[in-house]
Image 1 (spheres, rainbow, N blue to C red):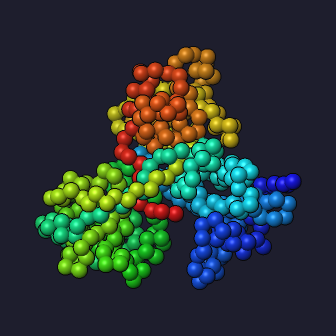
Image 2: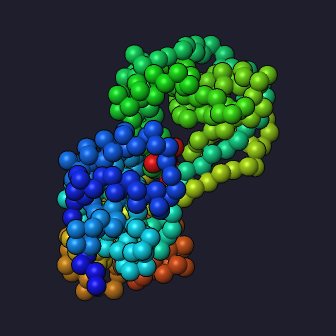
Image 3: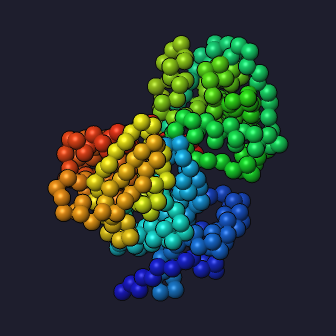
Amino acid sequence: MMDLQLRDLDSKDVGRSFDIRTRAFGPLPEAVRPRWEKDGLIAIDECRMPAVYDGDLLVARALIRPFTQYWGGRPLQMAGVAGVVVSPEYRGHGVGTQLMTFVARRSRELGYPVSVLYPATFSVYRRTGWEVAGVWSRVTIETRLLRDLRGGGDVVVREVGPKDAAELVAIMRRRYTTDRPNGPLDSTVDELAEDLGDSSTFAYATDDGFVLYGWQDRGLVVHHMVAGSLATARALWSVVGSGSSIAEKVHAYLAPDDPIHHVLGEEVDTGLRVERWMLRLIDVEAALGGRGYPMGVDADIPLVVEDPALPENRLVGRLEVHGSVGRFVADPSVGDSGDFARLGPNGLAALYAGTPTSSLRASGLITRGGPDLDARLDAAFVGRPAYLLDYF
């Protein structure tokens, strides 16, 4: 008989945590174990390693990683959930469901409005409120096509390094604020400086853009591209394309609607790699009030939100959107009317990430309301496709 307990991982069990991870996902190089365990101890100190014990035996654990993510061009703190593992003999007994409910609860206690994870399977995460929301995609481009962009006229491109990290972060944040993307992560100056200090990473910048790329096998891989104009984009891409005599292909992690698809003389290689990630609203009121909305939308949208795992997220009232800013206003009378949209955590996560209401209704993730209400919801939420440039 199991005696399951939800609590923080005990520091003495970091080694067993590594072993359970190996059984779940396969072995890591032994050389990474010291750094892995050191990072685990930091997470334990910060209450970011929720776990499940059977008595005194560790049987499951997850890691909450602190990120900042842009939604509608506004930054929100995001709990990145990684390393979710359950010991093989405890699978199929509801341990994963209990663990993920605990993860949601702990993420809320830590103050995160939203949470994201990359799923190895969908069922356990869907049961606990995470829903498919966006993509992490890599396109493959023939290097000669980038070379043929022939630069960007008078744009001056310069090599940059760790000392330029603050400038590049400022450029990125300006672009994300202006372009109003959904999903990409923010970078701190220290994080970007570390990337720039990697000898395998090459970085070039202009006044309104930059590119980070490097070699991968016999090809090139673009990790991050930011451009504030067509001229800048052409200049930076052509720098990458200058390697065409050596590298036949360039792999690039990009937004699905990146302008490169409209600039190249030929179609981007169809060898597209896509992985989907899942989103959960951890604090619904904070998440609705913290994201950006389309300019020019004025909407008053009656909503009823249910969330069995996080009862604090049960809301009855109105989402008011004006001037790209939204706020939820409690109004108990909404629940007595017939004109409101009812969503659980899965439907709300999908809507938040820009899924049209027609898809939500077809999948049963939204009920009540009608065409007029759906039009208001689509106007508020359906915009740029949600994406990430990073895998965690």
